[in-house]
Image (cartoon, rainbow, N blue to C red; front, side):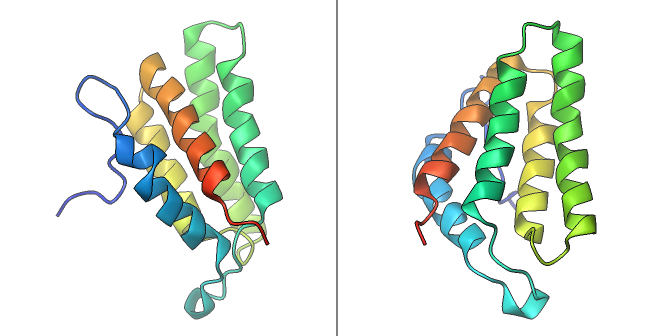
Length: 128
């Protein structure tokens, strides 16, 4: 069974559907409540804050090792938010971040492309 979160090609470039169709669909999914799981839709502020974390890490002048440690911590941050406010962070977003971080690994090119994916999701996020 293919992974629903398959973000990158073999050459570490982003799969274009993750800056278009899939990003749009996923952004809409994030904005709507999941009544069966009692999860509210994520707010645009929460999404933007997380996107800003990606940009902050990208723009750091620090060495690669430290950047990749901070990238790994992105999953810990979203997991903590989900634990502290289970109804405010959708499980789908936690899984998305987990897969994105795992697929970035230690590739700077993948991380830069992950920033594009996050930008697309923020851009497609419905206005309420």
